[in-house]
Image (cartoon, rainbow, N blue to C red; front, side, top):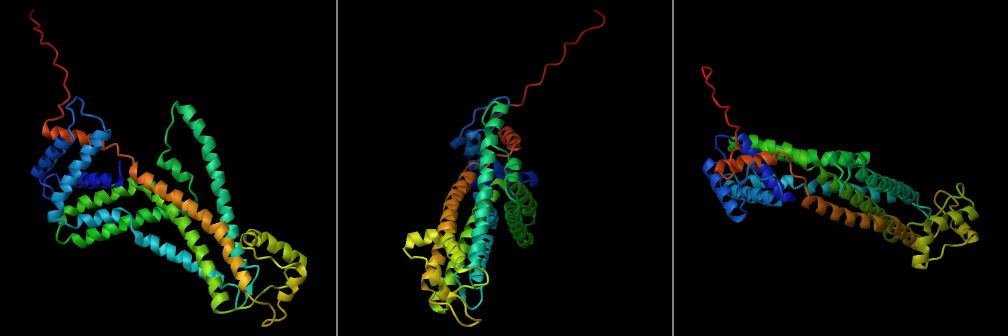
Length: 379
């Protein structure tokens, strides 16, 4: 079921389960909403009642939207609850801002001079390459395991949420849980704010928060995956901005320390680090004997112009971090969109559908077995 439709049905279902007397949603409103939904999406009266399928799910969604329209007149705060359940962007903005700030901070980690080896960049590249390797291994394992799983069960099947969560790393599981807890905390805050003037609605909202916290986990995981890629991309962009500021605004000198590398090994390391950026930009990496002119001669002297090195430092994370992460963000966005359209309908909705139809007489009661014939012991 689509995310918005499922949230509407979950909310109405939670309210109806906690509002048996009809204080929040009157029994008359419920009957009218059911009749309106049946006019637009008729369901055949069968025994047992119709099973959950696309048609019955659309019926429940139509009925829920009709009831929410009535509920908004008396309790407009339900829109804020649904907006909170749709996942807050405030948490995402905070994490993205933290990632960008981390990248800018790393660009200033090598002091008052620009080291042409850009050790913060090397650390960021190594981290991202490790992540890429882990993702490739996990994807390969899941691709190999899926056919065997499908063959053993006789038909293609989608992995359950528990199986999918085990494929995520610790950070992704933690962030998915943070998403879920943040959404639930926002809903609880809205309930606490509104309980003073609409106390009968609070139990239903609390039940909705609990139900969505469980059912929305696949969407939370998909959002967490995309957010981590975005944060990594923002960290790389922050690093690029930091080095650009140091080179083009502060006009810091660029050089290297001869205690770590010799001229030949330094040239080889620079070719390995900036080879792709050099080929793309046409900026040649100086030969070994020219690199000696960029060596630090003291704590405050030595080095040279930072212009070409800043360009190489900026192009390298663009090639190895920003572009791959951008592709991952696009794929992650498609995954979030797919999840929001295909959330699993709770199994309890089958009984909920039967109860709704039974209240209108559309679903006949199951036939009871006839009593045994009466026998006269005297015959």
